Length: 317
Image 1 (cartoon, rainbow, N blue to C red):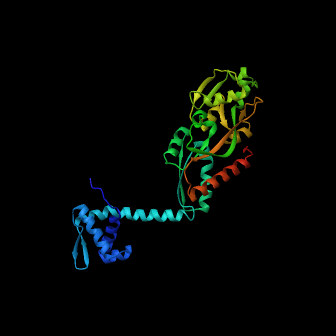
Image 2 (tube, rainbow, N blue to C red):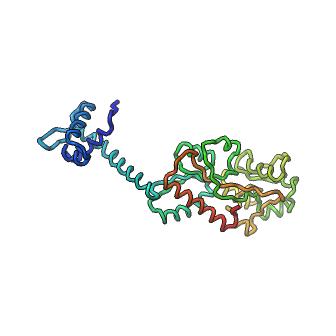
Image 3 (cartoon, helix red, strand yellow):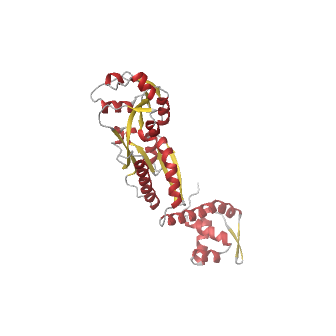
């Protein structure tokens, strides 16, 4: 396999081929003609094939040069474009931002926030990856996304505590509730929110371990062990909310995502008198990563926007 000893020789070759002249290439590169000639000679020696036929002051590319230029052209042009983008991004926001987010939160807020940001910074583009923390955090660690918006209540705290390569910046706070439909509250609970009543009910969960429902019980009925009846398992917030509204049972919800149904009485929050469960929404980045101007500008904009939206909904804690 051929391995170039000096990649700068390809850049010199690119200009010699483009100009069909040693003189023209030397002017473009701002180096002496002798330096250009020596570089081409070394490259020909390295490749063990001639690249140009010399006709007086003009150079005629060989077949080998034609093939090498076809490989080199995209690389050189792409590198020049990349360098311009890097220089531009140091002066003002420019380039792509890659975000990971929970599906419901992301779909509810990110489109609006990104549209507003692009009105100010039209040279910034976005890609969004929706998923669970266990999917998104490894992508963040691998450098495949720049930020993750994280519902900390939905994250296994035992696992998150040992992740020392991440920086969590709290963005906003929301109430996590156990809820049922109006009809279920009337016909099944009959208004009885005691432990003995709630432990007998049907539950809709995000996983087979019923982790979020169990978190709710641990917060509201500490030191009481309970065996719960899981009747449906679905892995996203919207599906849980729809199942609750169709009287399948009780489930844990983020209150700001079902505010309308709560306000209209379609959903009823179970309140036991214990302290409310507050979920922290955090913006997560790699601990030691030095953010670009684009990333710093957007992260500040994102945090301010989310806090403003939730504050207007009277949900920000």
